[in-house]
Length: 162
Image: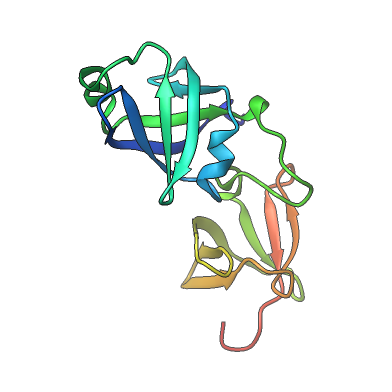
């Protein structure tokens, strides 16, 4: 069963003296998190009073945090989002839903292994397939032919040498 809460970042520091926190996003961009009204910290909903993107981080003012002392207590906490609060565009998936899917060779039907990680890279993400050997596959349509989360697989079209 898929979890309602997904890890989306980490509070890495304070920002200023008025209780703002600096969040390292684990999403496509910090702007993705800036649009949310609620973040979950320690499993509890926390309202977002304000949020903005600054140098690749999300700077957020959270309900109940009014000064630097409160912000310091939040440092190193993981920030989660509720999947129900987010609407993904067609063809987009949460990385957490991809981890553990079976990787299938489209041509042969052979199981290559399972998706063990998704590496964010500037041009595109890269899927890490762990099987008899480790295979790195760019997450682009030339290689990724079908993603079926309900059926638990991703079909790939690999080239010689992959």
